[in-house]
Length: 538
Image 1: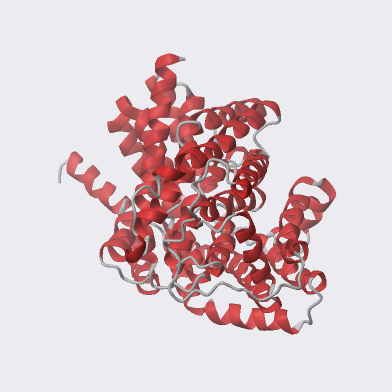
Image 2: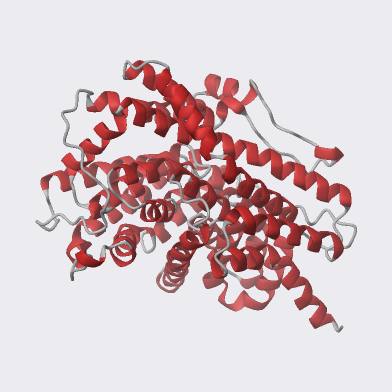
């Protein structure tokens, strides 16, 4: 085997963590509960026998993946127990009635709930939490489960660039040799400029996906997207232009939260007054078994929303108020460091800081806000635990595969990790068109790891080196990396598995990924085109 053949052979092995799950889940439509354990086994065997990963590193990665699974299952439990508790108290019915007061049009509801409310949750929590919160709300007002989870996943993209308090930038780019607060701020500003071309059109994309793939056969009609363009574009640009302003005047840390609130206000006011909207409300994706609740509501809208308001407030308090942040990150620390004696292998789980704890506490607070006996929470917890059994299998396999893939550099051979090998191979052959390729490297990272932050940590040093070698602005290239990592969250495996579990679609993960792949690719294409326009005219 010559050197070129050997390089190609190793590249295919490195790509196995992408190719094998895609083959099983998307092409063969195998449920994640079966496809992901098989994928994890095959990737693990490849890492050991071909990549030369040591047994100690391999087993420590397995334990790391199992521990990380617990942290995600805890978030999933929190999202489920809050939802189930509020269903028991009747709050979900009241919330749904409130949405219909703004608009009964499912296109409007998609933008307000999935995109804007989801972005607000992303800005406060991150960790893939938004889709687990917004998808059940959409199902409760008549969306089909597949539509709800698909739209929720696509929506959780633009805001991911800044995530919870700017973590994808401040932590994700911390491996860059020139990293400093001013550098981070400039990258955050560059991201918002690029998103004027990419993120502004996300509401239009959401409405297209809803009306193209989930319209009932008897409800198909022309113009359902075209008639929404003025309103959707106003909402999209209200998010991206306000994000630009906040990034320049206040910094990148709270862009997702502030831009979401700004656009949410614009969307709600315009929708309630019917501005820029067609007169006829569209309900063409409504489930056939859905019956609109017409019973008189005794619970106030504020009481119904109070647990979700508590979620946002508690998330912000634990992240921006120093004394509370200190307690949340130091008390009840269940992190596991130096797993099997390898200092590079660790898994963080700060229990009080976890969105899972905050969601669970908010479910308990619902009993007070809504004057309901504890039975509602107990019932919600039982239902939640019961529904998580099969999901745990898929998640633990996914996270084990991810950690083996990420830690494969801890080998007995002279090889870098699989992610680094992929990045180096691509950067060597695509340097001339790197502005177009850069976001796809970020997308690749988050598709596998399930985290824009981890994708940025893994690939940002390589992106920086390629930019310097090619004479490109490193701020522009790193901004493309962050945006690509955000786009990849639309289809990343463990987000899809978790969100599907919340809405009762376990086993349908491949179907969901097939519908989110194209929007994720389109987002990165638009970001790359925007980068070229910037270099040409500015």
